[in-house]
Length: 139
Image 1 (cartoon, rainbow, N blue to C red):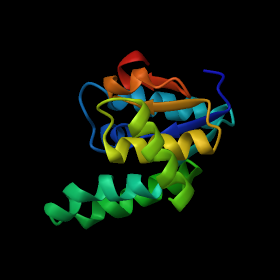
Image 2 (image 1 turned 120 degrees about the vertical axis):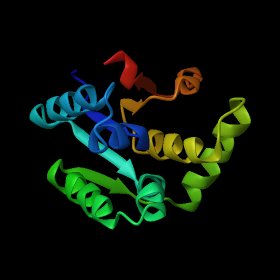
Image 3 (image 1 turned 135 degrees about the horizontal axis):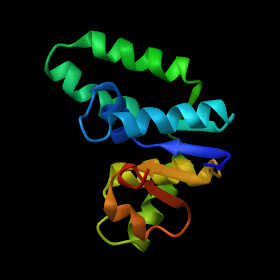
């Protein structure tokens, strides 16, 4: 992969860190390749919210610490959510049918940062024209 800026959605992190039998190796290999090729990797604060739900629900706070360490070790920049991103997310939801608010916020963050690729596993996001959507399934 030769993309220089990649935004990583929440699902790939869950697959990698929870040892998903179908996708864990694919995601870990892709992230390693990005890292070795000096690809700039991003995610957003929203990813933290989404990722942490199950560990909090199951009282597995060690998984949250592991997630935070993974982000640091992989040199993934965590982007804030802003009012302009929220407005852009609303425009995305207005333009594309069926896009959930959380997905629109992630996409708006990635597009605003001028990322080349949005790595996810949400097939519905293939309709987005403003950024190349790459599914974990396609790795």
